[in-house]
Amino acid sequence: MAESQQSHTEIHVGGASPYDVVLGRGLAERLPSILGERTERVALLYAAELAEQAQPVLDALVPHYDVLGLGLPEGEDAKTSAVAEGCWDALGEKGFTRSDAIVTFGGGATTDLGGFVAATWLRGVRVVHVPTTLLAMVDAAVGGKTGINTAAGKNLVGAFHEPAGVLCDLDLLRSLPREELVAGLGEVVKCGFIADPEILRFVESTDPASLTAESPVLTELVERAVRVKVDVVVADLKETGGADGHPGREILNYGHTLGHAVEKHSGYAIRHGEAVAVGCVYAAELARLAGLLPDEVAARHREAFARVGLPVSVSGAGAEAGFDDLIGAMRVDKKARGSQLRFLVLTGVAEPMILAGPDEALLRAAFEAVA
Image 1: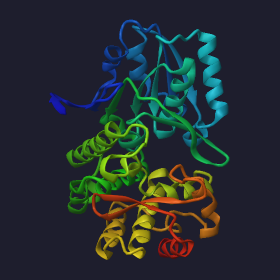
Image 2: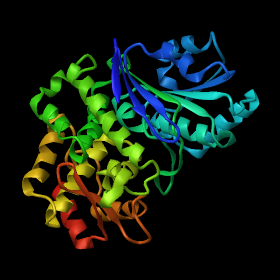
Image 3: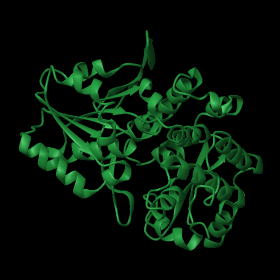
């Protein structure tokens, strides 16, 4: 349950390792209360280009802890084994123990890498995420998934490691480039289709240009998207499946099978939220052609994502890729089992299911609809 306390909202994440996701403004000063007095050393892993924005976090930490600042490469370049190894070496040189902690400050790539370093150092130390992008707030920072990329694909190496807390400071979105804010809406709209139709109604009834860092509607959308992820994660932390045949946590990967393939093929030049938007439209077309999803719901996918400024085709995302270029990457998707491809699809809004082993002709036909 969430409760409002003046300028912020707390959403509690239950389970074996409970924590709170705090949404509000000017939240850096809450870090010491989350990290506690037993902590002596804190590593601040931050996106190097955000050094100036990270200063309030540093100011909140320095009076209480011995702080190690580690600047990370930009974007997906941070999510490599070499960068992780550099972080491990720095933690070792500084003498980090299991009672010490990591704080991440940056977008989804920083959160994924920092969470992975925290999960693997001494087999797990505490981590607090301070996401700086809309995408990271509603996706990477919540749920305990961490990961790095390999030559074979995105996020194929990782661990489940829940944070000690997440601070979604909406003031940080003020400096976010418009295209990054729009990209983050890809995951928000996805949450509307998989679990919360009210998100779609907000998107469809709001002037997209008014969705800014100060917008009450954007705040509502962030909170709703976080709630969707929290509810799913609490019910199925490690993707073992939900009750009564529900796909469980796998629903969060809606649109990601094609989306990740498009990202990888582009060398990660295409933003994650943009690729997810295309992937969701593809999944909707696949379900429509399989006779599972009504035409009007498939059309609603195109309209909702396009309304907020997201691409709804592979070429529209700026990718020069055909089906044969992407099928290999889709086959190593985390939802695949053996040689069988599995897709999260919908039979209606908020009605998910797994489509296992669809015929390649069907996959090709759906791709032609989004090429």
